[in-house]
Amino acid sequence: MKKKFTYILFIAFFIAAVSAIIVKFKAKETAKANTVYIILPRKGADTNTGEWLTMKEKADALSAALKDNPTDHKSALRLASLFIQEARISGNYMYYDVAAMKTVNDVLNIDSANFEALVYKSLIYLSQHHFADGLATAQKAQQVNPYNAYIYGLMVDGNVEMGNYDSAVVNADRMVAIRPDLTSYSRISYVREIYGDYKGAIQAMKMAVDAGGPGDEYTEWSRYQLAGLYEKISDYKTAEALYNQSLQYRPDYPFAYAGLGRVAMAAGDYKKATDYLRKADVLITDNGIRDELSEAYRLAGETQKASDILATEIKDLSENAVAGDKDEAVGHYADRELAYAYLKAGDNNKALEHAMLEYNRRPDNIDVNETVGWVLYNKGDYAKALPYIKVALKTNAKNPVLLSRAALIYSKAGDAATAKVLMAEMPNSTYYLGANLKAEMIAANL
Image 1: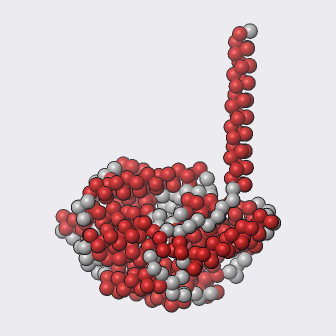
Image 2: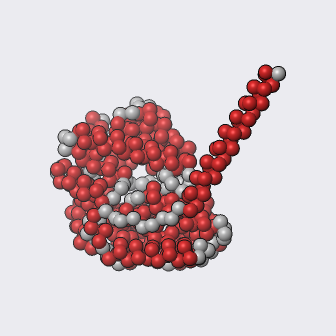
Image 3: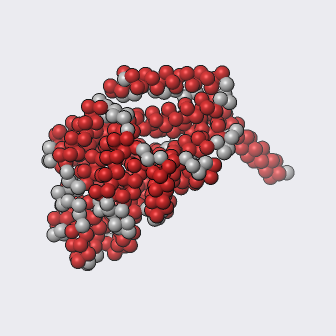
């Protein structure tokens, strides 16, 4: 009898616990559904620009329209577009991804085939590094409207990230044929770079810059990408001029400051590099910029600052990754970035763990294979690194860092001839590779 009573109490406790979980979940979901998102103030000079004030006025007006009519899909999608744009400009993806995804899903819950909503959802997924989901959503949107140029751009991005490079080329050609503009020229440039055509990539990115309005964020992002291409062929003079031009058209543009920081590092002026990169880091939340600042501090001999930044970077990336696993609306897959961060921290095992997590998501991507190969190199597993670096080289990419790492892997694996061939393919041997990689190459007599 006592045993039966205990059993009944256990069942009652279990039901109560499950009920509490359900109630808590429903309350959380209700709170999320009722949350109203706004445009937040930007950092630095951008807070007082006419562009931001105009955007805020638009966002406020659209929010008011939605409050009066929650089924106003046109206003909802315009607001989602502003959230996506602000995420790019501010770097505050954790906030604006949630805002944009909620707004888009509100539309899709009523109209699952809404083309514009599907486009935005794909774009949000891609920005979060949920590349398979982003590509699948873009393909669904393309079935709704196969005559829209921009959707082919998203399919380029998704296919590139998933390692489907032939499909990326086809979709880039479709995009530029429908609408030759900044967005299509920039995709053409990106694909050409992947296939090792720096001359063609520079030509296409110049066309992208020329097609945009000076000072517009998309134009200056394209100018930043163009300058980066010049860096990779070691034309630092042109790269520096382009970064300064961006700052003239768009004062306090953080990526231009970051570019000038890299140029300073290449010149060995680490004090100037840290100054520029600090400016960039204050203006935007971007782990890539933070990583470069850590490198600059380390080269400047300020190792504690470098270590502190690296620890913060690992913490933030880890939190983003966990959030991305739990909720489609927030958080980025960041395992590739974490792999490199752990490498710098000297934890090769954690680096390999995260590299393989990313590899399992997209085993055909050349950058992911490069990451796995480089982590295995750092662990001393040169033979194991070879198959991955071979995949990383499959498009004949000429990225100097990739070629240098590949040459080191082949050299350590006992294939000195292939290592020399890879070194001969470098666009320009004076490209800044970073102190560690350069030291490795000198030690290997490359």
